[in-house]
Image (cartoon, rainbow, N blue to C red; front, side, top):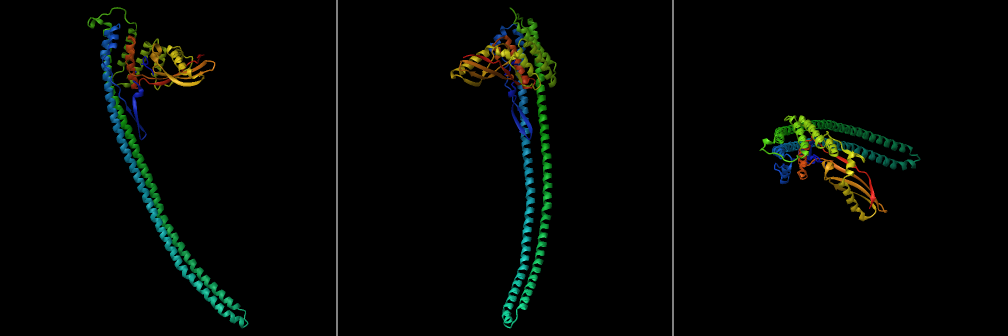
Length: 494
């Protein structure tokens, strides 16, 4: 984690709730904690022990209450924004649900109408088929019975006459011809009746199928046309809902921007007052209760003063309500601070300068890079190597992969790195030698803190700078990113 000794608002907490409504992302902003405008006793003592206590009191008396008011104002703007966004999202959800229900109901009703038509047509077709088939059998049944009766009569006549014919010397040929001729005639008569009935059946079925088609086909076309109309109208309504949502969210964003611009205008005025108070107290101490300084001044005071003067000048040039100009001036001011306050801190300066980019990419420092070398040569890393060995040597030879947190307590690394972790692979050999490969991983961001006051007067300036950068990070002027440093391989005996 960066700080100013990385440099200020934690973006990980700037947006804590993201909702999705119909493809539109609705982000709810999280309010920040209020700052305290009063100075803790240890900080007050540091200010009194500094080279320019009146200047610090004069500036902080104006700036800290103003910063608290700015945070309170921003929190109120964010609360109003969240309430408005939640109302917009809630109404959008209701409208979308109503539209979805209307669409589903319309589709179901249209489909039901179609299948009712199909059902009626199929029922009519079944009835027509049954009636036609009944008519067919009503006609062919009697004809079949007539044929069978005729054949039986011919057979009986043949049987009655054949023995007399043969007894009187005849051959019965005439009787056979008469019987067969009569049977063929009766059969042809039956076939004629059956063919006529079959033609009637076919005609009836063709008509019934035509009636079914005439009922179902238009109903199908009507259903598809109605479906298309429902899809078109509801899609248009859905698009209108999304357009309205985008418009409402844009209006909410604009309202938030307007509210923040008002807060920023007040902050610009407060910073101007703090700057004047600083300069007046620092360079005209007699104007402040006759206070005079004895002894040498803290050599860091000029650096801090110059850094803040450059920062305030950048803000003053932005103008109230002009966020883009404000942002540009902020970046320029932070580069001034980086070049002055971090002039002898190359690691912190490199990491901080990268955060001033738009959407900064993640960084990866290889072994041999000066950032990696500084970490490798630090006493904090040496202590961590000892802890890693102590973790695993009791387990004996083997390969161990894990991670361990690391905090740097002094100098350049403290100004650039906070709460990082080291991922490592340790190989313990049977001959009591070891190989250790390590990679430091960190997220460069800023968190509000009073901690830097504890170390020195220089820490007072760093804390104020850190907390202002925290605010800028919350507004997206300073951006976070992940970075890694591949440390040189270490070997030795265990």
